[in-house]
Image (cartoon, rainbow over all chains, first blue to last red; front, side, top):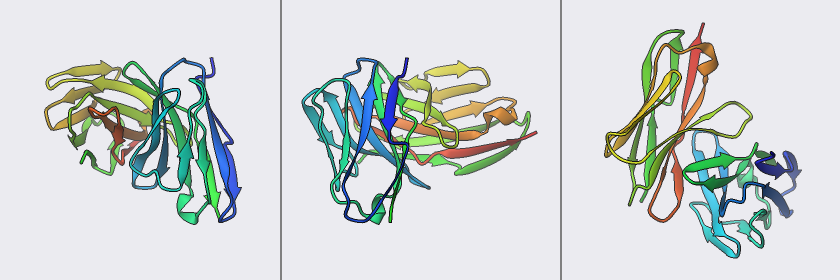
Length: 110
Length: 109
C-alpha cells in the first residue's frame, strides 16, 4: 500500500528551467494538494484539487501550474524556476478528516 | 484572513517533564483543527482532528484540546522519542487547510 508517492525525491535546477514534480495516490481520494515548506514558515498551500478536472489556487500559487486529469495523479509544474522556489514540496491527499502526506521532494534552484 | 500561530517556536524538556504546546487560530467557518507530527526529512504524520470547542482526544502521552480560539497539545511524561516538530492546521469553510509554523520539541533523557 504505497499511499502518496512523490517523485523525484531530490532535484537541482538552473534558474529558468522548467520541471514537473509528480504525485500519485492509490487511496482513491478526491482531494489532493501541494504544499511547500520553508524554515520558520510552516507548510504553505500552493494549489489544491477537489476532484478530477477541478483545481484552485492556494496561498502561494505564483510560478506553479497544476492539472488533475485523473483521480490518482496531481502533477505540479514549475514554469520557469527561480531561486525563491528552493524548498521542500509535499503532495497530500485528504480522505475523511485526515490528510496523508508524501515523503517530500527537495528542490534546489541555482 | 485565516491564520494559525503556534507557540513556542521551540521547547526543550527533560524526560518526564510534562508541558503544553499552543495553537491559536482565526478562521472563517472552522471545519476541523488538525495536529501533525513531523520527523526530520519526513512528511507530516497525522495525530488528531478536533471539530468543536470542548472536544478532547488522546493518544499515548499526547492529549489535544480545543476552544473557540485555540488548541493545546498536552504532552505527559515525554520520552526522547517524542522529539519532533508538531504542526497545527485548520481547515476553513472553503476546504483550504492552513498550517502553523510548528513547534520543535526536544526531549532530553
